[in-house]
Amino acid sequence: MKIADLLLVSWLACGVARGAEVGDYLRWRLLGQERTPDGGSALTFALESPPDRLPWESLEVVYRVFAFQRPGSSGAPGVPAPPEIYRKKAAPDETKIVLYSGRPARIELNARAEKGGQAYYARTLVHAFGESGRGDPESERLETAPSWPGFDLVASGGRYLRAQADGEVILRTGQKPARVEVFDDGSLAATLPANDEGRYGYTPSLDPKIQKTWRSFKSLVFAAELPDARTRFSFHLPVYRAYYGRIDYRGGLAALAASALAALAWVGWRGRKFRWR
Amino acid sequence: MALNVGTVGRLRQGAQYLSFALLMYGGRLGLHLGPALPCFGCPFVPGCGGYCYLMGLQGYIGFGMNAAALAGMGLWRALGWMLAFTLLVALLGKTWCGWICPFGLLQDWLAALRKRLGVRERLISTPAMERLAWVKYGFLVYMAVIPPLATMGFLPEDFHLPFCNICPGKSILPLFAGETKYLALNLDNAVTFGFSLALLCMTGVTLVGMFFKDRFFCIFCPLLALIHLLKPLTALKLVKTPSACVGCGNCRRACPMNIEAVEKDRENVQTGECLDCARCVESCPSSAALGLRFGNIPLIVSSRAGRAEREPFS
Image 1: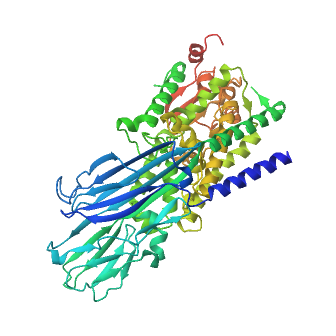
Image 2: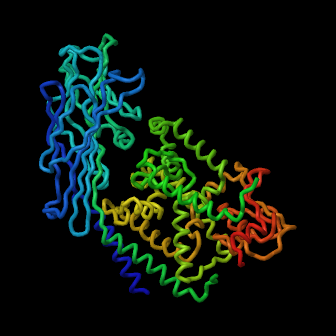
Image 3: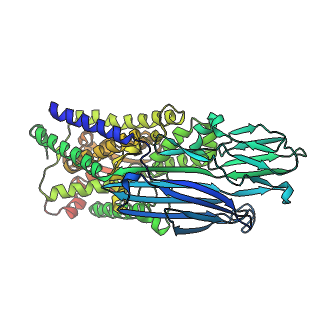
């Protein structure tokens, strides 16, 4: 029995050590973002694989886009119109997803790959491109910088990722806003410092509250209010809610069989003392 | 007008099969009964038609520590589902366990397999049963304590659904929809690994237990504990007329939980482990000795003729 216990503990310890590995994952990465001529957005993603796992025995990559309608475009007042949904096969090397101008969208990127009895999966949700606000002239638009070079995913315990942005949002209003805020669905807000150049840096990691509750929000929204107090703009930043990981069927079935056999052995061992009917 | 006790078995089996089909595959037909069911529909089953309240409960308990988050997920919706769960329990009591629960049907299948193979059932003594019964209340405490700690950041995020992560229903029920990934170890991090290992160990032990003991998992089921805590709200009761009892002991032998109280000389024989399955009523040879009642309305009442119809040569 002692040897069996020792083996079990060793096996568990090895498993925990293996499970705690970080960085050995399949993941989606945003390569870049650009504005399309009609004012829409194009996001380019690529799938990153652990080098030692290539080539995969099987690889399936798909994406789904939920393109929401413009507010009030159809349907009864107050009732949001259903989103347009399309699902396509993705390319692992480079998947470019073009989004409609002025329509918020949710993108789901899914990948599943298998090799050697283990399955890797990666799923990334991106809430992208929403634009609203009074005033449409170019001079009053709130825009993002052409790209978000510092917008990246930060691993959190290996499974969930946090979004960490240190890119810039550029206000091209010609006026210095009274305030610029960033807030999430949980109503946490951070007022950002404004400067005379009209450029406002944003680093969520400055506010630990936002990071801690990040699972509860769907998107980060920038809002700017001009001094006339009548003009408000907001812009949804794409926020990743991604998870990725690895599952091991062989180990799982071994654990299941071992526990069932242990239970059966116990029943067999103690069976004579049981009451049966 | 009570149901014919001779046909109750077939009726119960029909209800179990129908609920199994609806709860496991109903979502594929557009049926969504929501997350407040007092039985084991499982959200991890792709295309399920509704799922048990425990998942929602863990979420609400966790988010309850964060008023802003709870407001974001819909405080009124959370309260609405809580009310829906309470009303469903008030309406049907523990018949959710005995007549509707898909996981209960799986346990009945394994028990039927055991009988077909000629293996006898392992009995658990009443004192042992009373001790084991506390485990399900322990699970309730576990569900109440862990999610808030995860929400407050004292535990990793993967602790948000502590019971679902070790519930055998999560690994077994999705198999009927072709989902096998919960039979794998989750190697994302140490917490998910530990939970998936615990889940698979629980599954192995539960499968063996379900084979050797009728309704083995119900002994530990926290949903049964939750329903029992709401028992005062329901009018559905198993009632005995001691003066009509002939003391044959059939009721206890038929009871999948082997509840001793049902053969005692007292009117209230319903314990925390009773599933309201009415097998005791079916097996009772004495007219009006046992009955399942909704308030003063008799739903199923034992009768000599009914038992003779069900088992003519016994």
